[in-house]
Image (tube, rainbow, N blue to C red; front, top):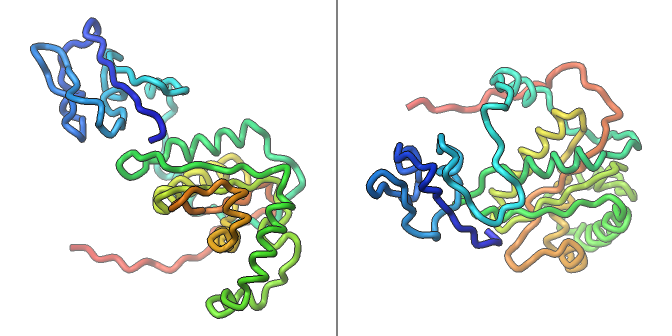
Amino acid sequence: MRTNHTISINHSKCVGCGMCVNDCPDKNIYLEGSKAVRRADDCLMCAHCLAICPQNAVSISDFEDIPEDLNSFSPIDGESILQLIKRRRSVRQFTQQTVSDELVQKILQAGQYTPSASNEQDVSYVVIRENLAEYEQLALHALQLGKPVVNVFSERIKKSEIDEHFFFKGAPLVIVVKAFSVVDGALAAASMELTAQAMGLGVFYSGYFSIVTRFSSKLKNRLGLQKNERVAATLVIGHPAVKYQRTALKERPEVLYD
């Protein structure tokens, strides 16, 4: 995490119910008398204590957002989530309609609230809108330099028409997901993609763009990649110019029940 946060427990509100003690994964809270007390600030900062307290007695410093009351959220139907996953497609045909700032912020929030290992929250983003052509040109140059190597590993790229829209397909928005843990970045990207699809947008992962960032110093500098930080995913987003009529077929997975 980038900021050192501090947990505070308001003892005038705390009733000593012990819910925060039982739910703390770090065992960083205990009861002293009839009040909850924290042991140290070097915990996960997962905010389970804040989320579970029925008296709203716990607060954590230096966050821009404020906690939202879960009781005001609409119930989520598991079948609807499964249908969303089934009907999602990788969209590569887009209209020229821009993606509103409001939708962009909601997509970024989906990444923000996705879990990360040890609550590191090590994922960051580059939102590309105005300079899409510049990024695409840098990526095309890197691809031309590395194409002999890429050809060895990818039969598909040998058959591809590599034009000026090869990476982004003329979409109006790209969000590059950066992370020190690729798993954390991939989890955030998946949440963002499903959120965007649920809001009527089309999305596809530009895997080739993510690959060329590994050997292009110009792209690394432009994206602000730090040492040991990688592009975990590149989300190409826009309003779809196509409408799919049915789900695609997927092979049944191999499953071991033990």
